[in-house]
Image 1 (cartoon, rainbow, N blue to C red):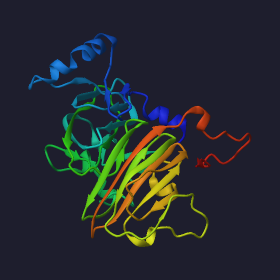
Image 2 (image 1 turned 135 degrees about the vertical axis):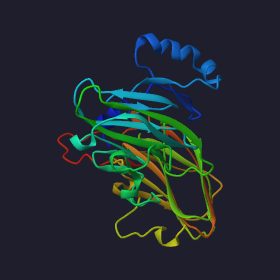
Image 3 (image 1 turned 90 degrees about the horizontal axis):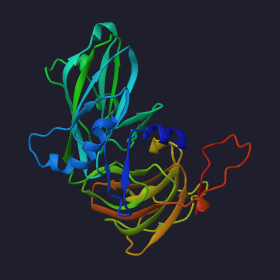
Image 4 (image 1 turned 90 degrees about the vertical axis):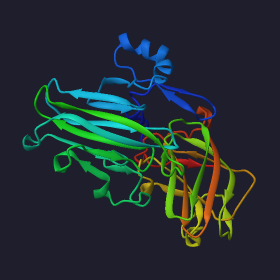
Length: 323
């Protein structure tokens, strides 16, 4: 994914990030309520009856619990709200006060993950559900209350409204996830541990920045050999072992469209590190389900002098460097 797309994706986020990888986001609509939210958010959260509220924009990013209301002032036919939580959380979306005309072409759809320019995160290779089951369509639902729960720390709402004064409300709630899988990082720097306990699945940790990744611990149930170097043509790596960690790089949101950088398929307790000069860097843990697999890693944003130089007149924007 290009830097321009990344800027568009995070246009509505105000991030206060630290070296530990923790971040807090402040939702701000108007200057009149932004300062109040900043100064008293912690105190208000202590009150059980407090619910953060603000209008929902046609293109929006939601990074905290709250109640968000969209009312169309004119036809809004291609709207989307990205929702992101902390890595160890999943997201519950609840629709209410819906006033749209499905027969006139209006719709509201909730998606388990993110979609941007046709690319999906998590990819179809990593998500436990087929794509059609990841959508919750208000206009196709017979239930009086429509809700959706994500499988990871990101979710999305698509909507289209033709008539002025039509709209809906969406409530965002964050729930604890004891075994986070398929995470979109909120920060370009931090550390994380992924664990897959006797499950046949793949878990990706996606960092939409060029970063240096340091693997500090890798525990796999079955270990054979390791290669921490760029892949070469015709090399199969660890993919046949069934349990391994892959490092991926690329300029795509969809991990299935990224290129494999390196594989590791035996346990380590020391440091293994690699610089991935791509728009998106991914640590991907693949598990056969026969063992408890675990990987711990740190990541940091590459400095400007560490980034690859753009080649003049280059027609291939998918090239990125690995060291």
